[in-house]
Length: 381
Image 1 (cartoon, rainbow, N blue to C red):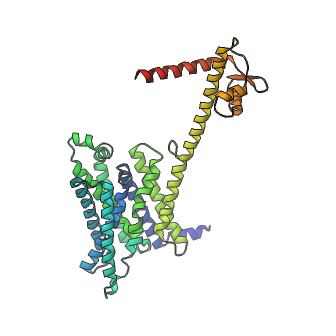
Image 2 (cartoon, rainbow, N blue to C red):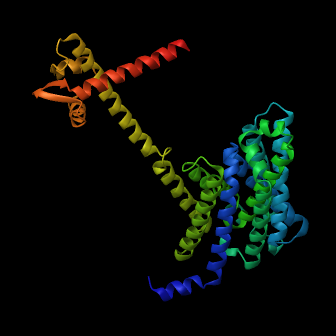
Image 3 (cartoon, one colour):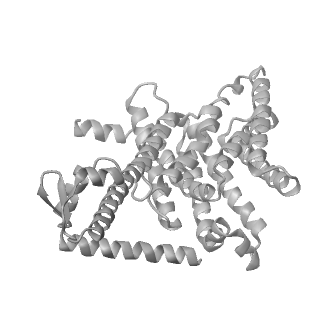
């Protein structure tokens, strides 16, 4: 690609504004999504984003203004009320949290769609465009919107740093936090409020429908790579930022490609790669570990069986037919015998006949002793 074209492309006002807005959203949503995921509240972002729709419509109906600040303020109030309802329902009834999330999501979103229908029937010319909050429209972002997103994100990060230890405690051990005298109710409400703010600043970019993916996907991907909260937050925000920038650039290069869904596609790629290849948790690593474990189990079984034969025979290094080992072992043994031979544990005297070496005999006796000790410990417990 021509360097001149790239310079011209990135100097475009709309491209730069959308890219900065998407990056800010990715960093903020990725950071707060880590807390929501670890608290097993992945649906919270979905519920809050859907609960914000009636706030957008009511703000327009009351003010007749399409100012993004007014509409997002209405969304924030509505989303915050939604979180408050979820807390009140779960704390004062037998309804579980997932049920309360589903109720708030469906009721608020249904009410929002009714209000949106009413707005669309109004004769005023300013009604058009509210439906962009459903799916987002990043191309409508202005420099002032990006500044607003940046300021709100700055406030979020300041509060996160100020309450980092407290948030960490309520995420991993809420009961211990209570025993230390921390105001868990206030901390819960504060953290949920920060999530509401993050969702509100993302409505213009990705919309109500896809905002939950911005919270959950980068955090889910980051969780596969680490067990430490700090590293997870950094990775999650990094995945969100890269996806935001890549999605905005891709949608700008390709005609009629929406920014929000493109960002989510990039996030999905991070999730898939992490699920497959992340060390310790990746699915491919699990398959590899399972294969190695099966191979080790088969080798252990062969050594034990050879030791059993050697104890019966007068000669501990007497060769035994592979058919006898197969009969009391686990499936075909040819590859296992070759592997043990390479380690120096067995030797082949004649075709299909194998015997323990001195090294193999010692290894088999040691292995048998370890297994007996483990059995004794389990039996005594």
